[in-house]
Image (cartoon, rainbow, N blue to C red):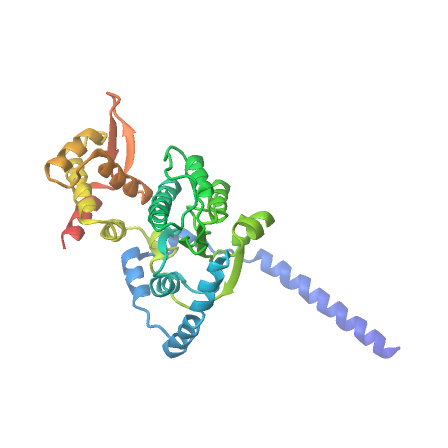
Length: 362
């Protein structure tokens, strides 16, 4: 009985001390510091520091990647069987997928979609795939392995292109195009319409999808039918422990403040991945914007004339192709001026634009 009384007294003492501590804590003076008081680091400096972080466990990571390379023949076999490959696991899988495509998919046409970009023009991607498939079917028709079916496609809409891809048939079951999608769960592809388009593309008999995912909620993008019937995924756990250097360029750092130099550097990285002619067309637009700061932008017709005079483009179609790339990477925006003309504008400050031209000239 005495022991029970002691236990109850201990419990009462604990409870009393607990609520007393809460009362004292609640009456204490709160800090006046705010999140905005934090002295943020310059974004360029922070990115350079992060980029130069020494990689740990290089030997073990190399052995891990070599183990993945032994699986390449199995992955190719799975593609030939009609499956799609979905890679998941910690670390950037961009290098792994590119190595797989360059070393083991040399017999097939490969189209790459960078889903980590801020925006992706899926119609242009589908058009490129349809053109590749059309060429493949023509070459097989000349060798006698193509059955009768569609021979041309009308590139008017996404539905037209998908209809061509569905309707094209070949007796050669090994005739297909591999579509590598880096981050199929990326910000530009997360909407239901894009995922449905990709699922319809994956269900075409001449298409094989090899994709990677990184977002924790990536599985919520797909319904059961899309997973098992359209994408037909085979899941592969391939953690690489590689930093997201390329994918992270397009995302602002939480502990960094933006700067003119960093904005220009990010744009320069994107432009340097484009063709020299595309870069020169962009420079014409940038020079015009700097010399006409009060205007809404450069009229598209004027840009075409200036680019054609300097032999950077040969037709309006070529210019439109360059402009599509600029818009996909959010380097250029369009608006109409007071006269109703479509004008092109680079959404950068004058200082950032000058810094960008300087970076491109180096």
